[in-house]
Image 1 (tube, rainbow over the protein chains, first blue to last red):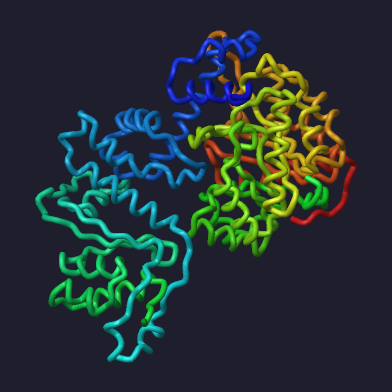
Image 2: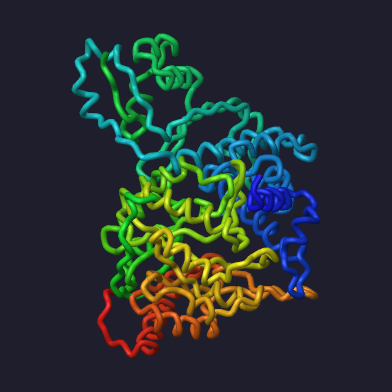
Length: 254
Length: 291
């Protein structure tokens, strides 16, 4: 290992929460301010800036648990799973699991899924750009061939299922929400489709059958096959909704 | 590297620009503020959707520079080729005025530390950074600018003064330099680097861009450090360094950075106009710049 590599390994260790190696402190010129205090400027920035990044990605989680608990949970997550790359909007996929696993959060069973919806919305917002299938292209498909169509989902499109009413929880956690709002956790299962329409992230609550239909389409099954898996539902309504708001990139005939 | 080395940076005087922040996207498009150009943090625009669309929209009306914070030019274990590919793709779309990065390291072994960390200024470090600058310039097909860092500590084994290190890097790689005069001031207080020595060490033709920004003072017992948070107006001490810098590097484009405590767009525009006035005073210039 080169001298620079060795120095950077020790430095990275200190930023990950290890006690600074004596060799690292010795390498830092003191100049009147203690080496460990100088090093702490970087350790603090590392923690604070990544906590802010997680806070921006998980607004519902932060509102649900409060700033102090959120910062604590962020700190342990950052130490255990630091970012792999510099695009911070891609950081935090594992954070909902982490926060839900903390003993102090176990009485909030909806916390993990609330965070997963934050993540799904963040992911949709930043997903790569792609062409959007227009309704006219779809309308031009011969009726007899429509069942063979396979759809290519827009990179922003995702599905989520939860035993909790996630959109209501998210709405109640917004800063502008009426503090008197009460959310019933027994409202039943939620099936959601989340994607980007123009610049905005949208979501649509699905029935269980609609969810099975959408999931089959996302897995690349043909329209006829997806419809069969879904049972008897009004597929046109779901399809039209997704197509008109940009949820698909292409429809392919074999 | 004998082939593929890009030509040296050429700049023309532009009115001072401002750092592009997402909170200002809508106001910029609506108000068309009188600034010369914008500088975008490259990593904030590497996804799709609204941020990328705003960057394209703003690029239609202004020159836009890409300022990277994540390449980690000083990492001993190499730079992330996938990240460099994303930067190259964005640069291909935006055709930026400049692509810049920092004399710093930000990660090791697949862990990104989200900070611009200091380097020891040694021959070994110079070789590592020069190799990475070559790699980036070859991939982008153009020279980049490398910025002098803000530091809270220095390494005892450094053998090359900061200015000489940057000058040698520019000569070896053909890269240009981005001189941040707030960082010069911060380093003077934090680690005792003399700003005038850095300015004097740089070749006059090598500096293509000058940053100004605010900082805050952290006093805790034995600690008095200036924190480079870009969270305040430019201080008078930094404006004085700016005047020295524009006198020595008159072709360099100026940019105002503001990140923490971000004020409304108007405040940044006023700071950019102040940079233009100060430049005219320092250089005796009366040239009409694009604004």
